[in-house]
Structures are given as C-alpha cells and as structure tokens.
Length: 192
View (cartoon, rainbow, N blue to C red):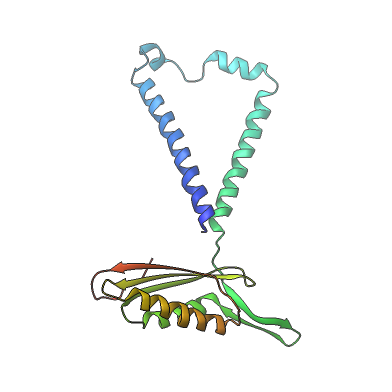
C-alpha cells in the first residue's frame, strides 16, 4: 500500500473509530440510566419516528441513497487497499518488433539486496522498486552495525549499488530513497 492510501486509512479509520466509540458509549450510558430511567426503558425508535418515516415520501429514498453512497465509499476504500506503488516488473530498452526484455521487480531487488548485504557493517537490507516501468523509483532500507562508517556505506550504496542497478536497468537516472537504521548485535536481520 502506498503512503497516500496509508494516510487515508489512518485518518478514516481513526475518525470512524471515534464516531463508533462515542455512539456506543452514548447507547451504553442510556441503557444504564445515565440520562434517567425514562430514556433507559424507552424504545430507540418511537412510534412518532415510525409515523414520520411513513408520512415523508422522501425518507426511504434518502435512506437507500445513503446506503448506496456508504457502499461505494466502502468499495473505494477496499480498492485503495489493493493498490500498491510496488513495481512488479520492468521492461528494458524500447519495445521493438523483435520483442522486449522484462525483469521481475523481485529479481532486481534481490540482486541489489545481495550486493548491499555484502558491504562492511550491513546487517540487513530490504529493497523495493516503486512507480511505473517508465519511471521506476527505488526505496532501500539498510540496517547497519553501530560502529559502521556511514560515509563509506553511503558512498558504496550511491556510487556502486545504485549505479550498478541503473546500468543493469539501462536508465540514466533512478531516484532512490535510502533509509539507514542502526542495529545492535551481530546477527543478520531482515529490515522491515
């Protein structure tokens, strides 16, 4: 899931959670008699409410339209969950009548992870190709030991690993975001 969808999820689910929590707390308080014994024993939908709904010709169409809107919003949310910026594969070179060479994103990132994983001080690596086949971007998370020379590590990543990847992908440029994270211990780790 990309960052935009993730941000929408956090905000939307937080607001929905707050609204549902407030509604549940109000219903619980009413049922326990916090607003007096009269409201606690009354029906939630009164006869007056039922008569109002029956007398107003617009009421049920509005209820139905609201249900449709909520359903469409729910479907849009589900589709946003499935959408990802992750690039499943790349086409190398330009398409010709002879065909096109395609690489899977996993093969490309695995090779990069193996190369960066061999650098001194690196404990774990996770690489992702994002964007489109025409405009790929690289996201690289590197976990390193605390005593690692960061300037040297950055130099290796920038001038060797990313340069090798650009050459392999036949690209003049490849935007890359590299996150470096210190870890303690000597065991290899997978970076999340």
